[in-house]
Length: 432
Ligand code: URA
Image 1 (cartoon, rainbow, N blue to C red):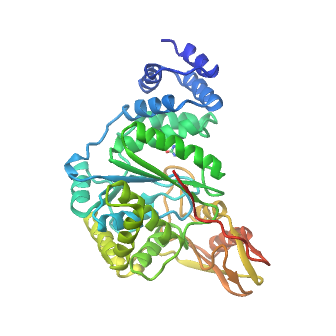
Image 2: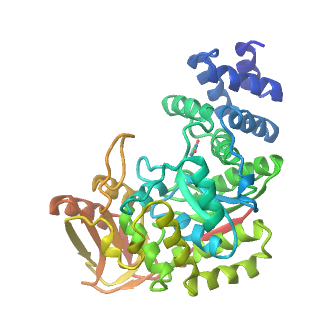
Image 3: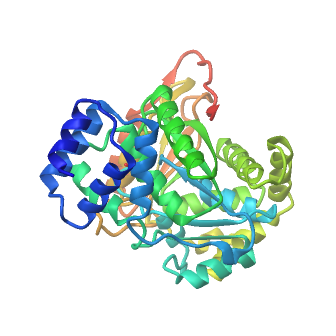
């Protein structure tokens, strides 16, 4: 096989065979296919797309480029969830204990945040002592005993994705549905859960800007999951506004604890219950409505809070944070912004909120940046709410008043108050 011929084939929109795709992936990982040839092929994929068969072949070849986990020692049906990333998206921290409290089993590997979207691992690491670097045996033992465990993605899974993603980032080839699909699904398949729920986000603060793009990505991912023999479903959700009230690592953990304690019910808790219901139904625990009732009971009875505490303790963290959120890291300064007029909130652009939190040090602009765990924003009013002049809109938490005021100006600029209420868009757009 010659890479030149395969680049030309993809460029002419001719379908590659499974063997050709495996050859490209293995050759690139082994350093036998140089970056300039791989870049040309990735660009051809970007421009011409790939068939479902090609996308599945690429995903499986990427999955097989490294270690694949065996979860069989857990001894029950396992379910994983992936979100394509958003602002204030802390659903994993809620649904893992909810699903565990309903008898489901969630072995979860998550990522750190980079850029304006946060990472689940950073949120968990804001809990004093919490360890996300557990050895595999401990990960499996905790998942079996408690029903959930969340650790950082192992460096040995899918080396092909690391190499390809780095090249895509440099060559304007990130933005391709088959390449995004194979990147995400290869990592999900290497983890090895029996069932996979995908939360595909669209809007300002998401990779996919429109519901149509999210639909296309979701369909591609579900198709690959099913071809790989998994129970797989996707939920398309709106990410135009931040999810829930808090953005920023310890602030997000605080919101999760308040929901698990039954003190807060909001769009975040509602979405988390729906996602948990789909995870339970994929795991064979009943239809979605029955599973939703089970999930609500787990939340209302305090069983999910107990699971969250047990998971924190098992992973070395200070489980007393679930009783006393002041044990979580807090920033030195706060600044509250107030409504300048009466009206209805018609927009709080999530990408701008994420970027403001980045300037506060709540996220990373480069991989090695350190994080201010206490930094972020607490929203007091949400899209659709009626507000009065002088009413608090949000509070920014940061290391200095200057940083807080700068971030507050940015968030205020993207918070639109309109004279009339807007028709509200549902958070869940479609299930695939
Ligand atoms: N997330 C991934 O893991 N891969 C992509 O290509 C895009 C988003």
